[in-house]
Length: 309
Image (spheres, rainbow, N blue to C red):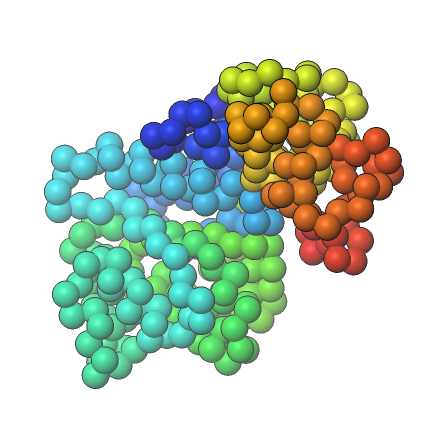
C-alpha cells in the first residue's frame, strides 16, 4: 500500500490517493483491458463497480492522467477518452456527450439524428486513435426509464461492434442490472470488477489499520492513537469501511482542532466531525465516537449506510 498526493493543498487529506490492494487490483484489471486492445486489436467491454466513495473514479482518473500524459508528445492521439455519462442517457445525448468530449465543433447541431451523431463519433474515435472510452456515473443507464435504458445500452453495444475502442463503464453496483435486461450487453460486458469497502473478516481487512495509520501521519495536529483496536472499530463503524467517509471524518476533525475548538483529535473532536460530515442528528448511542455507542453497524432505516448494506 502506498499514499500519494494529488492537488495543490498538501494539508488536506482529501487530496490523498491511497493505493490500497483493492484499488491496485481494480487498476490492474483496467490496465489489462487496455493492453489487450493494444496487443490484439480486439475490443471489449468492462464494468467497474462499487458503492459511492470507495475510490472508483479516483483510481481511474489516476490511470487516465498517467497514460495520456505519457503520450502527450503524440499530438494527434487521444489514447483514453474519459467523461461522465449524462444523467438521462439516450441514444442522441450519448452521441452529443461524446462529440463534445472529442471537441467536435458541430456537436450541438440539433438537426442531426442520433444515427448521424453516432457515425461521427466512430469516425472521430478512429481519427484520434482512441483506444479506450471510459464513461463514469454509468448507473444512470439503469436509473432512467426502461425503454431509454435499453436504447442507451444498445448504443454502447453498437459502439463496441462498430469501432475499435474498448469501453469501460464505471458506476454503482446496480449497474449489474443492465446485464439482466440485455443479453447481448451481458455478453459484451461479461468482464467486471467490484470495489468493496473494508469489512471485518474480509481478506482486505488487515489493511484498514494501515490506511488509518498513513492518514494519521499526514494530519499534522495532536491526536490520540487512531490505530488501537478500539479506535479502528470506531472508525470502521463511522465510515462503514469506505475511504471517502473515513477521510471526511478525519479531515473535519483536523479542521476542528486547527480552529481551536479542540486541543487535539480525540473522541470528542471525532464525534463532532462525524455529526458534521456524516449524520448530523445521530443519537449518542449511534455516534461511533460517543461513550454510549452500541457498536452496531449504521445500516438501519434512516441511518447513513442503510442503502450500502
